[in-house]
Length: 468
Image (tube, rainbow, N blue to C red; front, top):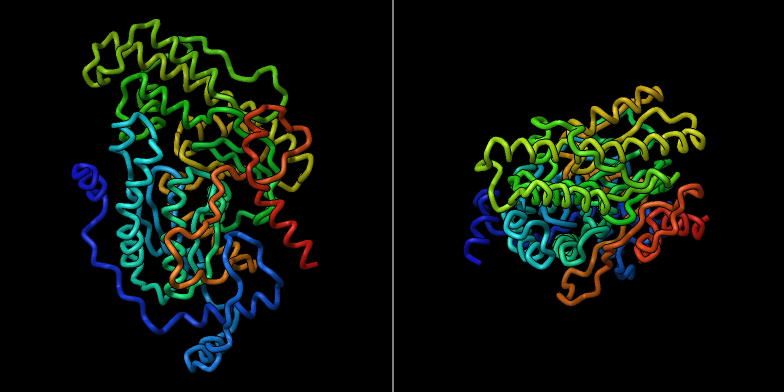
């Protein structure tokens, strides 16, 4: 455990202890929340929290009156917290798009040790560093909790054990400092962070989200998405990680970059892997079969993954490089084919579409970007890819998505200041983003069992109908 603490702490600087909470709450935020709630109607239910809060006693505070007099267009400052999988991240972002800070504590050493994400170990790793990561984000931004307008946090999809760490921390900060809280959909955040990077990006647009989960969506507005395609078993990120592990690559870079680097040395036509789901005329993804093909190819070449690539003979290295290149060609070709069909479907529904957003961890892969660029050129679209630091899981995308929803009146009031440790939390490990497009519906069993929660889009639409 000592070595674990050491490895996790090495990625962040020495930090001071959390400040004691101030008695001066950010009443400007509370007053803004109450005025907005009355003006816009009931909020959408992101988290299960009590809404029986009495704001009247704040109205007599001189500070509240002076801040409320500033009006409703005051710039927001939001803390974003992300712990959906294997990185602990926090960031502070302004509503004008300025990133005040961004902090990420990686679990790369754990990925190497366990050959992938081990949920219980990941949870413990998050718990060890979450306080430090959040404090460093505030320190780097040169703000205190009193300067914040709200807290945004990932509530799904993801690993429930990991999500719980971030949600508890967010609710503790929000409760202590009387801050509204926004529950964020992880995949929506990957899509909307492109609007921070490209301020001219307007709805509607198409988004290909490629990380631990593959998703093709038509984005019509904040919180309004049509699902064109999704993952029915393994995502491309999982396929990259497993391929890297079986080839004996350095997993500290994660599987995607490691495979891409080695693939540059290989012949992409050396192994004739079959492209997944060629017979299916939908936009869904499947990488389980390709993973099996890769594993069998590696076994046929007698490649020993216990021998690191750095120690492999030249002949062995070439064989690994050929497999890496062949895998990458087919894995990305699968993306291309599904993305091409999704663009055609989306443009039938929304002919005004001008952009294809590609985001998520695998979006930082230059080979992926170069191949998808051919699709956007064919359809006269523009390709929008956030920089690598905003493609992988990060707090900036959570804070920015929180801002987007907050500005539309979608947030919850502050949690109780002294919430019990065993309080029931609304965690959504399996949470669809949008409703399925009719032509893209799949009868795959995995898709049926995955719909544990109603989609984000359906929840928001239901809330809107109640208030209309």
